[in-house]
Amino acid sequence: MANPVRTRFAPSPTGYMHVGNLRTALYTYLQARHNGGTFILRIEDTDQGRLVEGATDIIYNTLRATGLTWDEGPDIGGPVGPYVQSQRMGMFKQYAEQLVKAGKAYYCFCTEERLNDLHEQQKANGEMSHYDGHCRDLPQEEI
Image 1 (cartoon, helix red, strand yellow):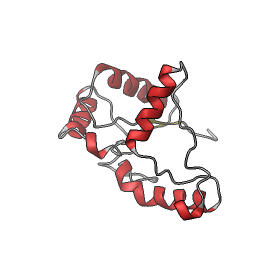
Image 2 (cartoon, helix red, strand yellow):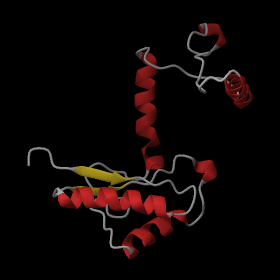
Image 3 (cartoon, helix red, strand yellow):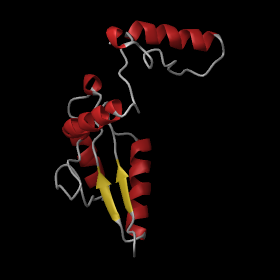
């Protein structure tokens, strides 16, 4: 097979494993196995403020109890680790800085209050909630 199938299940430990998570894991696991591919477990723990203690262990235990074994993941490694997103922050920062330098991204300095007000205003106007680009063209002296 020229391009082997690689699937991943990437739960967030901001809550406990539930049947919806398990269904997604099962689907991606079966897709990988059916196609002779690789099933990857990645932990999406970037929302550090909402992490639930013990949730990662519950994810591991639930998958193992249901017979879903992963080929690459936080506890066994693999060629494209680390498989815990918070451990990749340095790499993400490097790429984000490259995008800013190239003019493809910009820093946002909006307060949570401003963003909440914007969301409420858009909601009241029947608009989809979206960022208005306020910080995109800030003069250098304001940055």
